[in-house]
Image 1 (cartoon, rainbow, N blue to C red):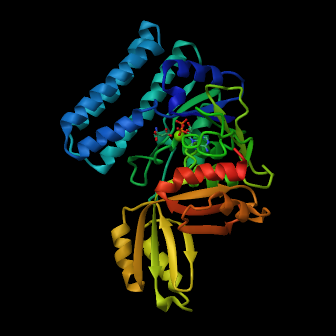
Image 2 (cartoon, rainbow, N blue to C red; image 1 turned 90 degrees about the vertical axis):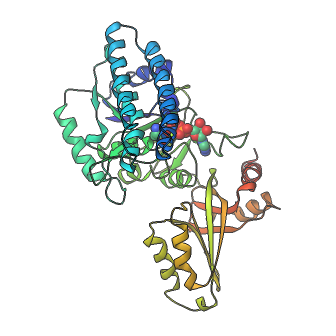
Image 3 (cartoon, rainbow, N blue to C red; image 1 turned 135 degrees about the vertical axis):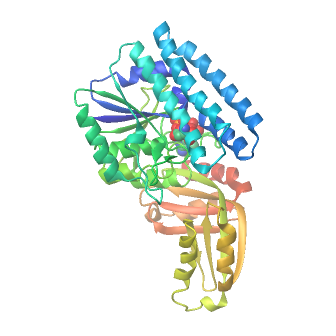
Length: 439
Ligand code: ADP
Ligand code: ASP
Ligand code: MG
């Protein structure tokens, strides 16, 4: 059985959905198909939610109506028969009735998650109506019945696997399953999600849960490129990546993959393919265990980073000092990305400023605290790059003149990270593209 995930742009137009239907019926292998919301929908839902959180019901209503008009038009072009039109319109009605009802309910975080779930619920149900119209036998699997996260918002792979296998057993005569990406249930049983871009994570979790033959991520580009194509002009697709390389790239900003979506497939050794819905014959990128070759493969950038420096003369020979510092971040559930230390200071970076004030307050007794916001981590990723000859020379020659705030080398043999001010991000990526790839 294989998993095929289609992102927002791959289902964002009726003609793309027609293409998805073709791609999922090309071969006879049983499949679980994971769909995102139509492109733009989750952004629209976030915006509706924000208006509601600010108490601006009038703007929220306007945005709901705009989104509904988009869906009504979509249905007109998606299905032809009257029966299918009625069914697809009933889906749209059901979900927009819900959105209109929430205008009358007081806003809460749980409600916010319910709002954000509407996109994937609608895309899958509408696609299911289309498949039914063209006579493709399938089952719609509600993700909320098997996709669970725990109190720490971590997906529960074992539980997901048990539930999913049971559902598949009950439908053992079926070959095609359609399910929602992104949405899940939390430890309280409420509707929740796997964070923005989370449909990739759903696909990887599902692939690991059923030990799929492959997890195909279909998107709008022909695989993982060596650099961010939104920022740098000359980029090329990479044929193969190891799980470690892909995980580093995803975590450090390659938007094509959700930041933490690699571990489930890595753990179960299910290969991942990144493919282009618009160019289905393009090679794409294969992510697998033995993706071999040594050397620099790609660059990625992660924005919105905050650097915190703790300067303390008492740190000299003080064992236990770092533990105490890290405990503060643990207490406020804020992961640290980069760390550098010297005899008198330690610098760390975080990407979430929700608890920044509390963290700084609790660090103050340890020494002088300096906070620099609007930083970017630039990661250089490749198998065993830290062993690659002259990598550091090449790297620093390439970015001569760029002020580098922190460097992380040797933490992982697959990653070298630099911290620069946001304003140097584009220039750094371009210079490294030239210096390391000759592009
Ligand atoms: P989907 O909606 O299918 O999930 P995303 O927009 O999340 O698609 O991811 C695909 C986009 O990721 C591409 O259109 C591209 O602009 C962006 N991207 C950023 N970095 C990279 C990279 N290194 N390789 C390929 N795409 C990248
Ligand atoms: N629809 C969600 C988002 O836009 C999940 C996804 O597309 O992966 O973030
Ligand atoms: Mg995505």
